[in-house]
Length: 339
Length: 151
Image (cartoon, rainbow over all chains, first blue to last red; front, side, top):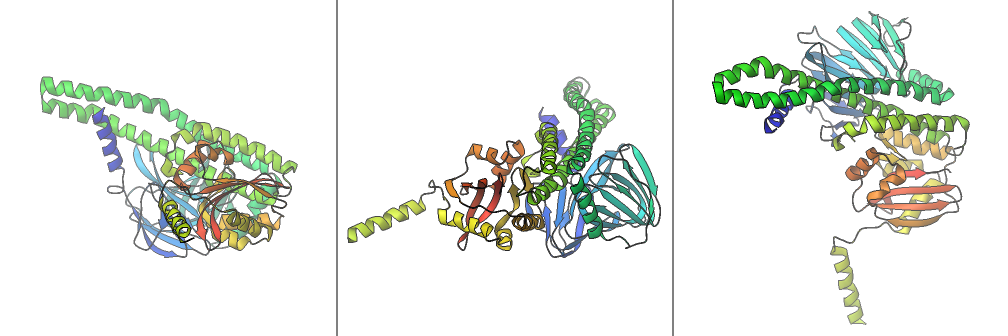
């Protein structure tokens, strides 16, 4: 058991910032908070690092620029929530730049390493040598606008490829919409976000339905991974015992050879599963906190003198359903630092 | 008379230095927050609100959102009129359920609600309200959370 713990500690170290890429704040303006992995929130300053699992929250009239080794520049605009995540894709660890709310611009150099994915509450995008902007609306919708390169936007099993001066909007729980042609800087975030909020107010219960669909898709991924992950953990424990026996009978070389051939690949596979489980859990948390929770706040403020309004009560019923699902499937997977 | 004063002085010092005596917000400080709500002073309410902020069962993490809530709710008529402060005390283990029965909110209380906080229950003609308060800033307490049935 101790060895298993040592293995997972090593896995955490190897996936930790010492070995993984870290981003560096090269410019900050106004109120830029960094929520670290322990859940502590502090002001981010120029020169501070951001590590996987950490979140940047910018306030009104604020801005942060983050540079990464394989990513030229990431500009986080005002009133934005950005989380630096990682998952496993195609047998390799991949950075995921998640924009839960607000807007960000990405500019990439010709990439030597693996390009990151970009995620919002409604889609995931794969990128190829790209300069583009992501808008994440208050209702969970996304708008992706490409300046150069190529972006593949995926949602609900469908993918749309975008080239220069193309964009696409994705509503939560729905496939990407029709491609649009758009000039750089021609769509203002605030105007777009207000239109999304107006759409939400016209059918608030329907808005939560889309979020629920998205939440269920995260939970489905977790459920898919969990049985194999648990099985692998047990397998590793058995293999560790086997290694000890092997060393006793045939010596250290036999142990080392068996470890490299059989145990190490299993350990890597299991650590990737853990990474993905964490990724989907944090994505669900982000959806709940930065989209569903804010929509509740908007509705509460709007109907504060009219709590029996049918629009409001319908919304509350749907919101409660969303929370029930979240509470049962996601909360048990959270740690205090996530709150 | 002098003996009485000395006795009261040392009694007060003893009470003040005793760590086990919880700090409870005075009624006047709770009334000062209610007054801010009733006079529509959203700017001061925003200034006094902690981040993260608890609104019913929701954890609000963006300062702009807390300001938006106070401004919009007050504009839409939030008020606590004809009220009585029914209880004030330090939050206990079960008090997170006042806001929400979720485990997430219990975790919020464990992490963000200091032991010397106070939870005030206010009965008003417009419903029942809860204020989660801590510390002092001038005559006002800091606001960690707000819950209201109606307005």
